[in-house]
Length: 134
Image (cartoon, rainbow, N blue to C red; front, side, top):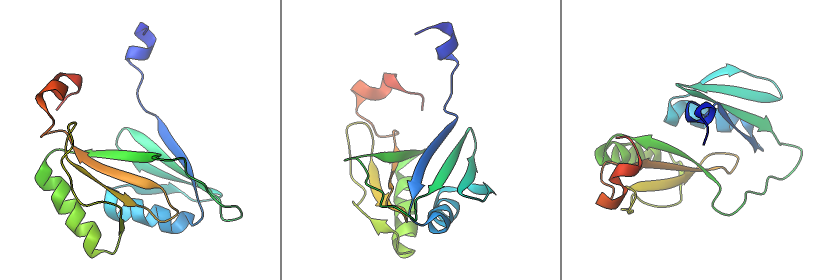
């Protein structure tokens, strides 16, 4: 790693959706994004990075196995609260909240098919504690 890449940060994530409007609405309603631009691609803003949703209404989107976007919350209580809110809003839940060695999490599916992980590292196993900032 060079000194240049040590200061590099995530700029954006870009992915296709067969229903850009519904996908953007999901990211606004459940993940705190704001829509900054609409067109063939929609630009959503998050603190520190952007999400670009490309219109794929005219062709099928095939997601690679386990491709997903992950968001991290501070505590397990926060993860459980968001899970309950999404479940009540009829979000397609792929798992319940479960304990993982790198921290508890759950998976859901945004409209358009993208898999979303919501996790916390607050309860990660001790051997992983030094590998990230809490």
